Amino acid sequence: MNSVLLGIDIGTSACKAAAFDSEGKVLAQATKGYNVYYPEPGFVEQNPMEWWNAVTVAIREIIETGKVKPEKIAGIGVDGQSWSAIPVDSSGNVLNNTPIWMDTRSKDICEELTRKIGFERIFSISGNSLEPTYTTSKILWFKKNKPEVYNKTYKFLQSNSFIAYKLTGVMTQDRSQGYGLHMFNMKSGEYDHSLSDEFGIPVEKLPDIYACHEVIGEVTAEAAEVTGLIAGTPVVAGGLDAACGTLGVGVLETGQTQEQGGQAGGMSICVDKAIAHPKLILSYHVVPDVWLLQGGTVGGGSLKWFREQLGFYEENQAKLTGKRAFQIMDEEAADIPHGSEGLIFLPYMAGERSPLWDGKAKGVFFGLDYSKTRAHMIRAIMEGCAYALYHNIKTAEEAKVSAGILNAMGGAANSRLWTQIKADVTGRVINVPSSDTATTLGAAILAGVGTGLYSSFKDAVDRTVSVKRVHEPDMNAHKQYMKYYEIYLEIYEKLKETMQKA
Image (cartoon, rainbow, N blue to C red; front, side):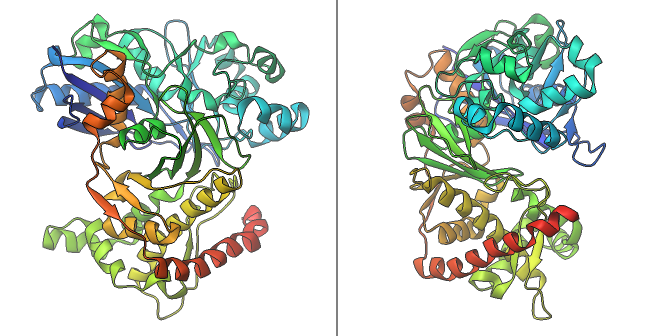
């Protein structure tokens, strides 16, 4: 029996592909980068064909260098970044770069439609506010500004569904990514034709909806030739990267919570019904009959930005010592007291998503003086991202949804210091399973359930996910952090009008 599962993750900066055995052990993995384009202020785009090219190279590397036999692969799952709007014609040709989740070009369209249709009408169906980062307004931007693209478009695809199409030739829309489309009914999991008409987006331009673990087709001969896979290998619909990562850290039951720290940070709380909050994000989980109340932030890449722009010392030390630059940054920040002695960082480096929904929000260091060092700045960045996480957790409580133990994923979870800071700021226990492979593992689990390798999602999690570290919160530190957290909130409130002018 074939027992290898392949997970593919379409991230913001790179694609990751990983092969797992049935117990969740990584057999081989590869990462391949691609470009992000910023053609105009507020425009953030990627070329889906660059994703596909990176995927083919990564899969070939796994097969050829990783010694994974393609005939042993039982199934393939694909996850991807949220809120793409990939216009393809009936032959699957990409007609334009896709705006990605950071793109805010359609702000005016959102404001106009919210006035015309009404916030309550939109929110009652979709469970989400109409924001320019979502897919809906991006489709309408094409309709308004590039009618030649819109009129030629047969379907608008998501990031994972595009790769699934390239593998199988089948165009799909999985339920977990449905939340990007405001005519997607968050309670029924189907399109609302009436609201679709009000938006002016024909349902015919949207693919049929599939369960995330549903087998949608098989690898075609054409895809097999460019990837090295075996034609006929089953492919499931896949899902949202945050939802697959949530599954990949073992979060699948009500009350369990995932915390992520990568280019996109945030949290996902499992709920057993469609509980929405206008300042948060509601989506289907990749697990059937479960929803995720999510908070999404943009500050996760702040530390990477600091290393690239100001981290010359750490980069040089890394060359001399053999340590990673991020490890050296951890060691420096560990010597700074809780609260960074009053240095507070607002991590709004690309505006901010929930719960602010402010595309004009700016990154800010507050409290700089001659006593502050690079180490203070590094720790303040970590703490600022933790405050953003806590802000979302507290907002969820307004909907009477409580986050319990947090299961961490993403690159930030590799930092013991950063994870402990998050535990101390939130006052919650944080478990760390395999942080770097959680998302691809979640995608692979979908393939395993869909092809019958696992009897259920619980069976899959029990067999593949194990906690490697546990971080208990220091409640004395938590009390100290709450003083700075209040200042963190106050800084934004006092600066937000000024930020609009910059």
